[in-house]
Length: 424
Image 1 (tube, helix red, strand yellow):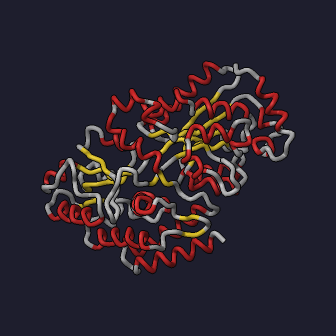
Image 2 (image 1 turned 90 degrees about the horizontal axis):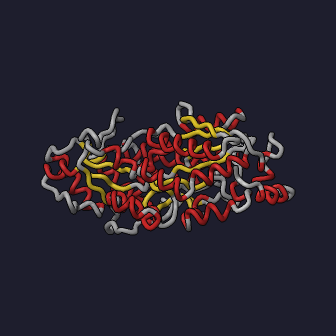
Image 3 (image 1 turned 60 degrees about the vertical axis):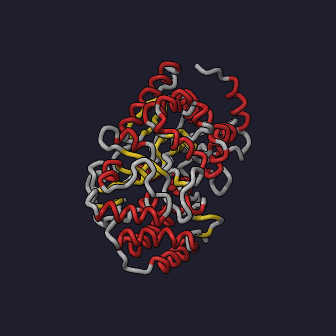
């Protein structure tokens, strides 16, 4: 059992109304320091579930009086909808290890989240573990309602077999610039090496822009979609990325149809935007290479990309937050982050990954390029109505860029105006 000395101090701090870990007990008086059984939700990814089971087993062996029960997040249209419904119903688990940063403002507005910096040493723990990138996960009130957990920096995978069939270099393909990428895409399709050069989902779900527009916009600018409560993409850089994708669709180098299955894995598309989770997913299925997404001037090793992070949130429905906070730190310790890396190939949002886990990166050098990107990720903006902001952007994108029903430049201007109004 953990010594209780620190808890006396925590209880004293709870006399201060501003201590959020204490001041948000809601229906559970004394929850901030209470200990006992807790429930956690994991994603449905098999590797993450396996990681979750071992961390729960390790905790329960050492803390028999504070048992943790884990399960996959219940099925629903989206994880965000399931979590939101659980907050409204008051039956959310203590911790959720699959929270999209884009949904945090909504869950916070619903009163469903506990500020982690309200726990003694909470802010120091978050910032020391993740370093400077942690700042992107502060809410507008300056507090941390999410622990930055793991990142999947989005890069460009390419199929070496398809590239060889089209007579394109498989070790240094000309994919660094928009111009080079478009010429390569045309060669891949016209040669018959692949039906499409690339096939991101054309659907209108709010998050789909994270895998076509956003990595390239982040690489071009290093900026998020919104900064200072203003949309940033109605710019030369935003129009350049939109024009690049519009040409891919207009020339049938990217497909407009929804695709059942994995177009990159089965060879229908020669390239895909994905993070390090794809290394294991494509092992033995595709002879792949990976490079940074293109920019107008040419990609560079330290250019930014979208993080595709999933974080951990602690919920106000939790009656035993003392245990939840300790389990959160236990499950994101150096040891457990190392196991997450080994078991899933996803990058813990921890500073200096290659120095922390040199044996892993020596044994698995294909992950080094992703580890290097962790220090340069751009997150979704942490703003109120975040999902509505992304939906407004996606609607404009699908209508103009994918289906060509409107001028992309005007669509970006209109979406920017709509988003600015949402943020007022």
